[in-house]
Length: 264
Figure (cartoon, one colour):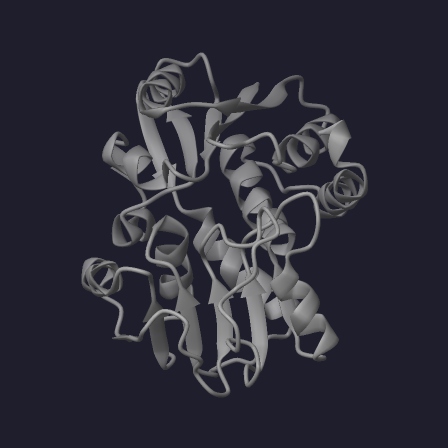
């Protein structure tokens, strides 16, 4: 079974370590590789899924919305998000799923982030759409560098919320970072975490993001990019294989890959 991760950049990804360990534990012959692609490369890879050269694929930034456009059988949640991160071969068709939504929900519970608290969502792309759908029903505030993008996101996914200026704190909110900020050591706008009650930072790189360090120092509950990665990886694995994912094996592989990123 051949699987790939499609995006750019992908060299930092921990997904190959997680999925190769899972296949080995389940006795499944195959491989999971990270593949840096542009738009043309994405479309070519989707054709590989469609015609059986690949069993499936994960899709990461910046291609989640483009993959949705090229997928003929998206799930209901992928349709709502207008973005997907998991492709599955289906007898000449490509099924698309958004396991990021599941990943947010599962990681939120695991980290014991406050249920029902206001949410300050940073970003307006595919990851932000998944997060907004996952937390729909709360007092949602969306901040993006281009306010029109935030308004367009809420209208497209049909989730109630309000657009707030980039960099403006929301008191007593869980801050959800659905931007790449932090992947290369960047900080979030100053003051966003001063009165927050939790942090969900989807960004991850070779080290913890500055925002995660700040939140942990403040003693607030934190869900990290790797936490979400594990949760969505479990959902993806089960879609590809039809088998229960070996959660403990995948968690151990993730932990090992975090400690030794050069081994990915």
